[in-house]
Image 1 (cartoon, rainbow, N blue to C red):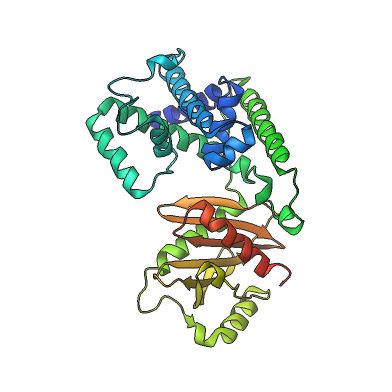
Image 2 (cartoon, rainbow, N blue to C red):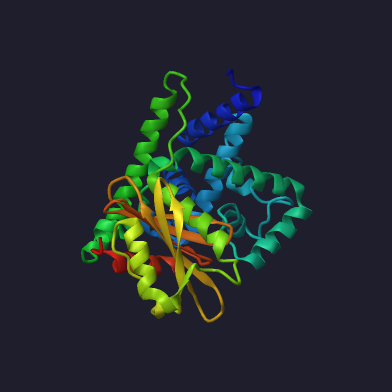
Length: 348
């Protein structure tokens, strides 16, 4: 069936975004990828690039404005001195450029997000700019996410979790960041040298595991009467049953150092077989879930994904996909995911 006009326009916009990305200075392009696609925190991106966090924020702002200007008019972005004014908060405004960039990247807490949204409501031109930058970030992520299924930071790679931490991790991050930028430059040039648009990318295996985990999490954490199928009172039976159905020995990792206690679990459909969900809660009633199912693919890095207030770390190891999901920040969830990984390691 021929593509509709809307589909063709969308395809051209994606192609133009990738082409424009390759026109940005390397330091801006690398940060757009590290923050926008890889979901690195601003602090981590600063370590990768070897610059202060303030420089990260200013380069993100300039890179996004330059990309927007090139896409809209084919001209370069305004000079930095021209980037402030009535519709772009500068000195003296309650919302600064750093918060605008954090808004684009979904890095604000609920209170600051509400403050930014209220401010944007009073400045329509600025709101339009933010909407454009958020859309372009989403399009970049959707096109490149599968190509960067393994996050750049060395500390998130499962192979390195098995080994002692090395003092040279910062140097490894810098090399990885350079490799990302060079890879994208080569890929975009190859895609568009002959005017050929890229073909859709299949989701990475870890993305499928993360999506399944988040769907199950949303479905059952809201349950009051039946959050689990088998309660913690029958923990031994629960783990034996789930282990038999999944074909690997399961354990319930001890998350008490993080304030979580096991509630129980349930059996779920997962891919072409079965999946298991273990649910934990803390004294405040906040719930965390661990999701396990068979998954194809070689050992991969942790993959971070956020949907609404629920964050997920997912990975594949020894033929199984694992995911930890909770209403937590990336930095809060990472040590829990590492503990869960260690809890399952070697229990196949």
